[in-house]
Structure formats: C-alpha cells, structure tokens
Length: 286
Image (tube, one colour):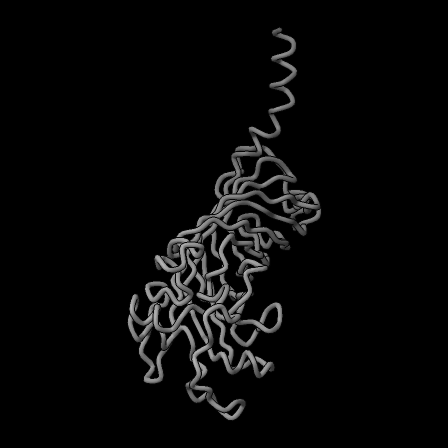
C-alpha cells in the first residue's frame, strides 16, 4: 500500500508543483449576437464592445483551469435586413450581457518549450440579460414586462411564464497565446456562447391577439410587439395592420447565441518556486 501511495505521489508531483502558477488579467474586445433579428448568422454591423477579468491556474503543461467575469453589449435590428418581410416587422433591441464563467483550456503545444500555443476551451457560465428598445422619441423601453408574445398571460398558458433574465450558457471556443515576458502572456480568443433561451432579443414565436395584449399589458405592449406601422426609411411602406393571432413573429427552432472575441493580457503570479523552466531561462545570457 505504501509503495502504491508513493507511486501516485510521484506521478502527482509535476501537477502539484506546476499548480503554483496562477495568472490574473484582462480581456477586451467585441461582442456579437445571433438570433431572430439577424438575417445572417452574425451581423457584424451590430458589433459592440466587451471587457472582462480572468483568472487562470496551470495544472500541467497542457491543462489550464480558468474563470472570469465579463460584460458586453449585444444588439440587432430589422431595419438593416435585406428581406422586406423582416424590414416590415421593424423590431430592434439591445441588451447588456453580464457573465461569470468557469472552464478549462487544453493547450495544443507546450508553451514553455515553444513560447506560444493555440488552445481550445469550454466550460459553463451564468449570465444575465435585459432586452430593451427605443421608441420614436429615443426613450428606452424595457421589453420583458410587456409580454410581447403572450408570456405570462392566462390566455396563452403554452407560453409559460415570462422568460428568466438569469440563464445558463455553454461557452466554448479557440484562442492563441504567447509568452511576452516571463510574467506576461498575451493572446487572442473567440468564444461562442450557446444559450438555452430564445429571448435575448425578445423575439421567438408568434404574435398574440392584439385586443388580449392591450387588455392585459396596455397599449405599449401592442406598440412594441408589432412596429410595422412605423416609418422605417425608404425600404418599406408602413403597414398599420397588426398581424393576426398566431402569425409568425420569430422562429423558436434555434436558440439565441452571443459571442465574445478579445485580446487577453495575463500576469503570472508565482511560478518561481515551482522549479519549472521557461523558454526564457533556457536562453543564454548576454
């Protein structure tokens, strides 16, 4: 038994010593959205900024655990779509995204040997969102409370309650990092977030009865459920006719996504006592 325990400890020593390396840093870049207001998979005209804090812990040369908090904005609008049917719908939204995530990176190369490595990562995150739009005067309008597709209305029990503003997503993506100095590592990564909601943009299924929506949520709910009666540039003539109950408004076939892409700068804490060599220590001194 002692021999087995000694053998396990011997194998674990590189992991325990390597684990003394922690990295803290920043990520800054752009955020994008994919959902019902995109005619394309991603409309880069609605690219918005994102920033975040990151913490990483090297478990061995190829496995890094990671966690962090990020903030970004996402947005979309029918006005820039090519399809006249989508332009006529005339919906738009923007939403902040607050995210906390935990995950792991798999380094493809030994970064201490090569000085750089591509990597893949995956994990789980908890995020919040809050879709809003602007009225014709530029005032911000919160969309969720309006139940634009009948969420929470007794007449539409199949729609369930109003969608939760705190959700779980699955982040995954690819990146590249290289050792800039013995303490600083620079990189770039892009990460997709697969969500379990179709309401990042407040659009998912069908229109509900106009009179029911008016009675339950008021005129504002009707106004922002269907905006085809508003002027929308020169692409389409405004249509004052509110769609019939059950007419297509969005598509529930696919859930919404958001994407964070950014540059990273990480500062290494510790590591000096772990005894691991770096590519810098192998260089001859001048």
